[in-house]
Length: 421
Image (cartoon, rainbow, N blue to C red; front, side):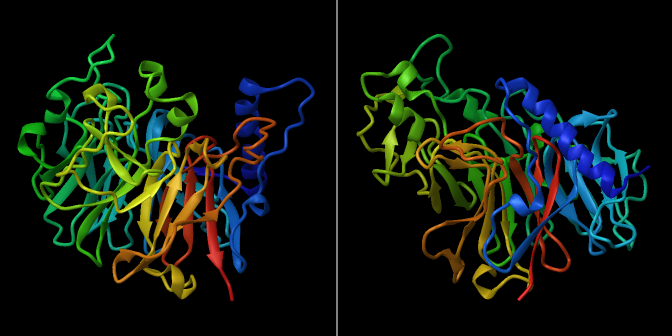
């Protein structure tokens, strides 16, 4: 267990950011770290940096007492989960504990357990009445042995209202399901047998393997963001799109088109749904499902009649890595039951990125255009960048008071966004 003060936390911001800066440093370029006041949020909102220098902090979950559990995608001091506490209630994390000897992305408190994923499966830890882990050294294994080829291997997950099933992402390690060394797609795409979708497992059964699960939804290349919407009693995911159109098909796509399509998407999934990957992609400009060039498309040919339409479409390559439906009472009414989405990439089309967006929902359906809620985590103008990216929003969590927490998988900072009338 470590005690860390405010000075250490602020120094951590500089040290970590400087490390990233060195890799991209230009001559005579000053270093200015992002501070809380640099984050742009709507009027009435306030941003605080409550922790920093944690490592590759991917997803978060928060106890009823305000303690934070954070999942790391790279081990720190040999461990992959943080327990973070503000013991004196001054708004800064001053006590940290590391445990769990596996890296990964997903983490969630549900039904008296802390669930956390590795890149091959999901574990759980029994909690006491204060939602503290009882035994940090002996987690129970829910499922293990899932596909891990080192790319798009995060095993994000969610749990349904009945606490009967756990839904686990298995992302594809082959961006367009292309035959290696060619511009031709596999037909059929055999990867879909074990990846590129969401698998359902029994939440209350231990030591399951891949064969114990059932494919819940297919044709989703990589859904790092997952949440079970308790209002709709359905699964929502954020899906990463594919790339490299111009590289293999310059006769159909310009470099600009390749940088601006396909859309990153939100899907609301029911059992048996198909997002269409790799055979089709969603073009947000044409607002159509387009046949992938590996499967006979030319950038205009439509297809995928049986494939699901996205619930929301965002610009390409923004990297939506988490989704959270806001159920708190702190924020103004417009935000209630709407979706926040964390992006750890950027859009060539918008010249924007590294932000948290908001999608308004009315009667459980998207209502109106999505908007940028929290911006400038990058710490610079992305139209004319002058240095390294400072922070990449990745994970989201709602605190017991209704505040929104955002973690950063580049410099390992945690931001708290609150609202006061």
